[in-house]
Length: 402
Image 1 (cartoon, rainbow, N blue to C red):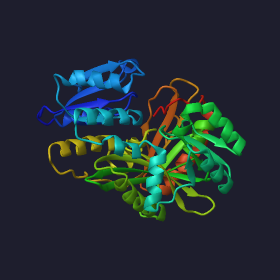
Image 2 (cartoon, rainbow, N blue to C red):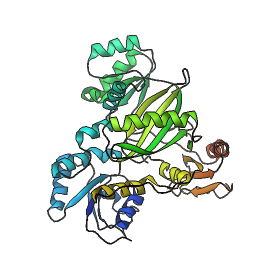
Image 3 (tube, rainbow, N blue to C red):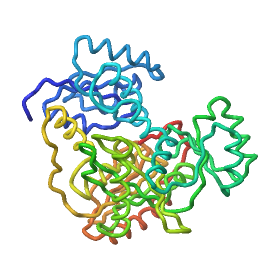
Image 4 (cartoon, rainbow, N blue to C red):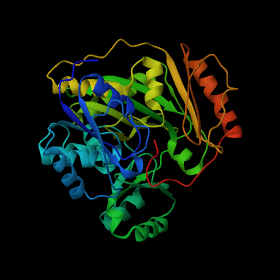
């Protein structure tokens, strides 16, 4: 372990995640202070490396969180503030601005949290997006619905994953949905539904340049899995293939233009079944959920959580950041909610299995091969078997759970 340099890094999370980042920060000699919610006080945090762990009640206002952190700052000098969960990004940005700590501020954060803001910027850059409109002016809404054919998706501007999305087929459904939203309707946008295949690009940005990007393709669209149930899969696409090249090119233009100077990103695109063209869906300045970090680690040999810690510490100390050597394998995951608390996957015995997920009421595996086709073959087989053996479903949550 590196010598303790004494820098204090505050990490904020209202969800249990990011243990690898916390460990790497400590390994690099930082004093790690974790602020989480009371309900996660006994979660599986790496207490052996944490300098301090503080909890707060759920649902605190920004002012209350600011007062809490400002109180801690009376005797601690925070040199970085990191939000581990997407829902904490705005909180962390406000804290940075209030305490004048370096890092992403509120304006840039908006481009990675507000689906309307990021779409408007993408259009300005010439990046294709499904046709959309804000839900503010009713004349604009009427004109949009006359011009753009249904179905449409009514999307929260600042949620994550597929939470809160409604698929609507006629104007009357839209007006009824807006009536139910009341004063919250301006926090949504309306977007044309484009049937297609969903891809995600998970990247690392340093000094305003994307230095690493991993392209993967989902099996079923995440929105379909969340709303209808089923098995989630994702796999690395063929390296150097047309999907890999085109999505990396778009990502390398989009992410810096949205204002990210340093950090990790998870960006989603859809390839239209009708035209074959890629459309930008959304991006977030965070590590992808649903064990995507582990899939990347088994594909390339690097973990986004660990690299995020490394690049933040490098910037903090005025040192250059360099990617570690990488492998060139292919990996993919299969994951579902399970009917039993601890599903047994031991009878899945392919030599390509490299990771068995240990998560309450979940079944999951990661497979790795030098052959992209072999990964795809295994995921197709396992997703069908998971559906029959393990798969359960539950109502769409208020926020993502991974």
